[in-house]
Structures are given as C-alpha cells and as structure tokens.
Length: 409
Ligand SMILES: Cc1ncc(COP(=O)(O)O)c(C=O)c1O
Image (cartoon, rainbow, N blue to C red; front, side):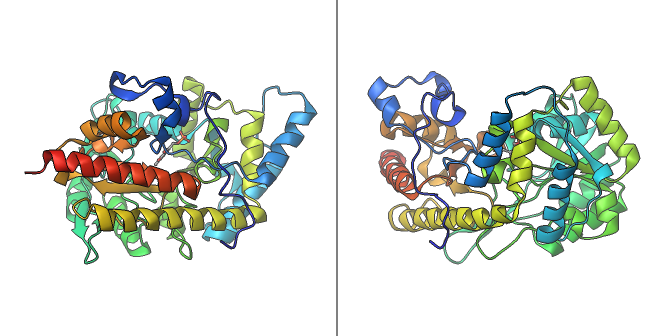
C-alpha cells in the first residue's frame, strides 16, 4: 500500500448511533447479545474508515470556534468545489449554478417533484439504488424501468450494459418526463464510458428529456481510472442536465448532510429552488460545509488514491474466494463504487431469505437485491479494513456454501 493514510485501523462504531452497526435488524430478527457483538455489517453504503485527518482538523477548528448558528455557504466553499471539478474532472462550473441541500436523496426527491406532476413517468435503469424508486413513488410519479442488460464475461464474472433501444423508446414516450442516471452506477458497479454517456445524452436531448445525473459515487473508481461527469461531455449535455453530488460518500461524511446540485439553466434552477424551499431541505449545518471544502483539497486526491487501492484489494479478495469456493455465485465486475454485486440465484433462495439466514447463521449482514429491483442478487459493502473484510468474506463463503448445499438438488 503506497498511501500514508490509515485504512487499516478498525474503529469500534458500536454504540455511537451508527446506522450500519447499531440499527435494528431486518425482518424482526433478534440475536443474542453475543451474536450481536459478533455481527459484521457489510450492508448500507457507509465506510468503516476513520475520516481523513485534514477533514478532522478542519472540523476541529470549526468546533473550537464554539458557535454553531445558522449557516450559509461562503466563497472559499465554491472556490474549492469549482477547482476540484475543473482540475480533477475537466468540468467547468459557475458559482451561480449551485444549490445546496442536506443530501443527494432529498435532492433526487426535490428534482422529481420540480419536473414531474403525479402520474408522469421517470426513467430509471434497474438494478439501481433504492431511493431512485422511492423518490419517484413518494411524488406519486410513475417508474419507467429500462433494465440494464447483463453480459457474462469470460472469466466467470458478469457486467451490465445500457439498453439503448429501450431508452430510445422510453424517451420517445411523451409520458416520460425525466431520466435519472446513476453515474457511476450503484449497484451495477459501472463507470459509464464516454461513449455510453454520449449515447444516452444524445437520446435524451433528441426527445427533450432532462437528465438528472446522480454522481455521488464519482470518486470511487478502480485505481488508475476516472469517472466521466455527464455534464463534461458537451455544453448541451451540461445545459440540459442537473448533477447531484457530494464528497460524503467517498470521504465518509454522510452523517454531516451536505450535498450540491448543479443546474446551469436558470429556469430549472428556479423550479428546484422552490421545492427545496417548500420542503425546507436547504438549511445546511456548519460541519457539513466545512467537510466538503476540506475534502476538495490536494490532500483529498491522495486520500482517494489510498481508499481506492484498499477497496479494490478487498474486491479482489472477494472475487478470489468466491471463485474458489462458490463458482456458482458469480461476482459482478467492479469498475466503480465500493459495492460488490453477487448473483445468488444458484442457491434457489431469494436474496431476502439469504440476507436473513446469513445474519442468523453467520452474523454477517449484506443487502438483499430486492430493494434495487432484483432479488436474485446480494450487495456486499467493501469499504472496511482488510482484516474485517477477510472475516466477512469467510462468513459469507461459509454461510452461502451451507445454504447452497441445503437447497441445491
Ligand atoms: C446513488 C446514490 N445516491 C445517493 C445516495 C445517498 O445520498 P445522501 O446520503 O447524500 O442522501 C446513495 C447512497 O448510497 C447512492 O448510492
């Protein structure tokens, strides 16, 4: 490992009100106190790494100031975000295009409300992050799913591609008003290529469908590769899209609740601003703003290098162990995100049954694919120290081997 940042210390998060470690178990499962203590959570997309020292120092400085009143975003914040996207992602942004809120999920919901009346269609590509479904449903809108197409790879893994014919048909339907793009894609692990993004952008533009690009996973990519921001590909794509992002996913600061919206078109920005105001989701907190500014610094680049190396080592460990012990459970290729997607259909069980049984028998907690639109898959969070990952993978292998022995003919 070439990084000088710490991705190996296992910090005990239990008892801190931490969703990943302390939340009640699903399906009404109860464990004995000893079993609960033993539980390894590899579910929700939250990392077990301690935040980067430069973020903690910035937060400490703000904490030491001692006054935590209502907060606005100030000049240095914009300078940091704009510089980061210009230098790292070749995306030129202007300060006046920004709006803020407490998270990308509130933004997704706000944008759907701003653009779509109840009953109107929103295009998604399943399997996809569960809040894509809920942001549409909670606004009384209609989901138009154009599922990703699975492609098996020669090494036993698989990947996904976009269904461009399906997207063309969906965008041509005037009942569909918006396209939600997950770039990079959770849980398919795709870092969409420039060619794929150009193709989806051309289709959306041709039919006048705004593209809402959720780019929260943008910094987590296989070492040596980088994601392409949808809006960076042309002036037209930038103008006819809205980008939602936050460093919270990649710097593990989700609990500080701060995210950005970039909308170049003033009319679109105004529509979104109104919903943010009506729903009162624009009030940010001082620590959120400080954490974003600190993350988007030259040290942030180095920290991400170390993070991505750690995540991909963990991914390779998972692929190797599953390849040896569970060849009937193919793992999806991972280009981006720290979330591995595994096909468990050979078990003959639903992913929800698997999730429940793994918690009970092995005390390892993964996500069932149902919430992402496909219950033949499980999602495994790879963002933890390698020792914890190794133990988590051992338990997955034990549990899945036992389950498949029991259920396979
Ligand atoms: C694609 C995607 N968008 C948004 C979020 C969550 O965003 P936030 O915590 O800022 O609401 C997640 C979390 O996993 C995600 O995967």
